[in-house]
Length: 428
Image (cartoon, rainbow, N blue to C red; front, side, top):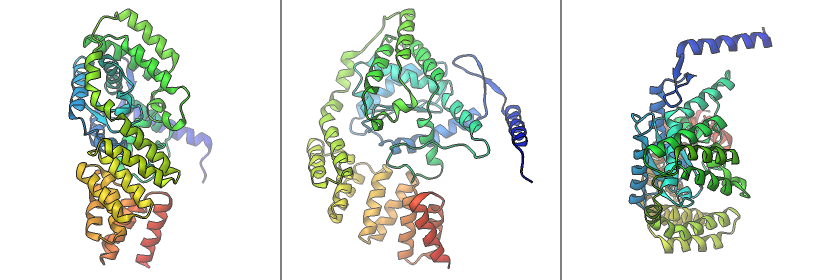
């Protein structure tokens, strides 16, 4: 018998009441207000820890070329975390190799900032404004609240996922590795954003920074959001929408807190000197990627070679050149680039994936299996499982092939369809 709308509403109300009874309410450690807590903190902390590395990888990976810059960002972040309302959280800070201005926080204080945002800033105090804002998101549990809200909206379907937007790995990442991307793409409410601004500025003042830098930061965000293409607006402005209202509210609070404090402009410029020196290389890389996406492979190859001439230790440049060469039919030359990329940054799943797919094309089954397996150990993807199935089948391991195809078939789209067909062929 089909349930009536009234019965659905009754079931929903009963389910919500049960959740509230089971989980109860907690006191927000930042605001002191009571809030619904469906997700135990221990589970949220474990989730943040588990997803920190995979989420970094899907957003460009660690900016490993400048260890001192990573250490600097960590030191500023830890200084702010120490004066926060949750100094006990296991905070971590990392600079990501991504040119889009963005920063994000996972539960437990797992925080990242893109090199693309660092180059837009002018002082250590502005950096402190970014990091303190993210620290509040973590301390106040805003990500968990967003997950709860989404779960409440999506009852009957399960916890709704968020698209990876323009991320090139949208649709192929599998299993738990999607959760971090879901969290950082969740759009914070206006209340969460204003709350993070306000308490973040208080953390800045406690740590000895000039809180007016938070006003400068919001003005930078408003400027960056104006007249930009939609692809650029993904990330920071999708999850942290800027507005003139935030600028004015920050300005008022800065007056109340006082504008004395450290700005650290000279120190910041010195710490950013190497990254700024590399900017022409990353601009050439971005142009190469654009040209390649339009099918202009010869011009794209020229541009990525310009980037490599500036910095020949950047794995991302070789990975892109390998993709360009492969698109041009130069499979063996592409293999050399993928070898170079994995040699420079072996922990990056995408470089291992490119290497494995390329090796399979050359029927180098040993390398293909090793690289695709390593890629899946870091970030599991449906394409890696599908091609591991192909490798196993070529090696005569039908049971192993079936297991990989079955895993890939759990995804969606063309990859899943191919996996299901190959699995059916095996079992028919």
